[in-house]
Length: 115
Length: 114
Image (cartoon, rainbow over all chains, first blue to last red; front, side, top):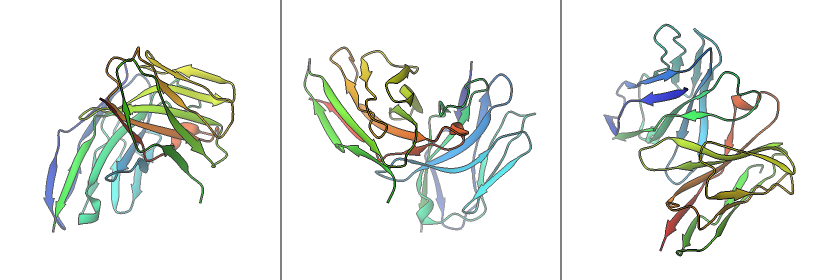
């Protein structure tokens, strides 16, 4: 079946450190891939997306590249800020799910950035 | 401002009680969704609706019910049949064009059992 696996958290970094949050997926065919971010006490917001292999999604200094050969979509940022502290979710839209918002989410990775 | 409003922010349920979580959107979106979030787990889809007066079960629909009488509203009822209701519930909506590419989420309702 379809699934998403993220690295265990929490991830604790100092401000201006490099961030990587690993995400791998299992799916038949070619899903669309997403990163969502959840700030404390809020709902999820779309951070970036990639809809086909080798696409790179980017937003607010975050990047992720759709790697079909390794079934991965790792999230990276060159220099994190305290304001980036949040929970990050990797998600996929299963092939064949039609034009719906039925997403499969990973378990989430908490990022804590210290000044 | 357009968005999704969930209420209440916190809700407590007694044994054997049904409770209803509200979700309203003014984004003119056709599709709406309910997800459940448990600590250390990803979000799981409970129900979704792509059009008024129609809805489909998601992966964990047992113990829940929904209605979609208006485009703007998609309330979720957690029934007494749901034996483990404590969780964070998130409502979302999307347009119908390439809906999977962007979901808009509300700020959630934390449901706890007394």
